Image 1 (tube, one colour):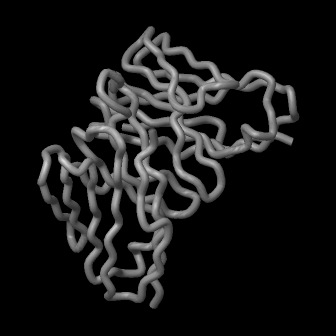
Image 2: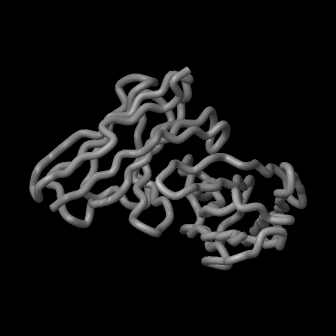
Image 3: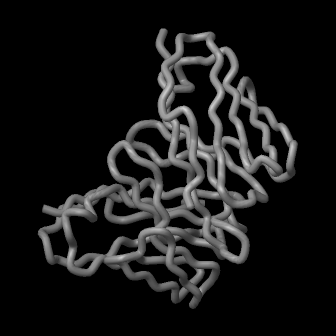
Length: 112
Length: 111
């Protein structure tokens, strides 16, 4: 099992550009999450999904969009990137709410 | 609302003990603890499912008091490898499938 795979690992964007952060898991988990972690800070929930076709907002959803067309994939879309979106983004999946929780290795995004 | 952890940071010498607390303004049904090393993803330590439950893993144990809506992580005879940031994780409240993390506690163990 690869677990949770995120791509890319690093990315630099210019202000106003868009990009998609990819996340895929091979554990057949229904629950998937996107978090952001600013330097020296905790993890903030952006969006989450409890199954294919079902997504919901977390604590800090503004400026982001997600989709969940399959159980395996949960991409995060940034439209019109802003410097405030400079952060490390973690994708995670779990069997139930917080049960058997697995993180990806993170994507370090810089917006300049 | 994000669970609040205390202390925010702690520095220990090897062999000393530490306690990290996690308090929520909402009812807790379960609490999970994670440790994150610098530049890495958080790693799961343990889960507590019942009020008053205590669990242990090596010299790290935890308790969960659902009435007080808080959990504590106990690190005994700390080792250099315990250094990192500790987070509690929990549901985001009843009627939601959110999973959120506490504010974090930075722990540094010195030789």
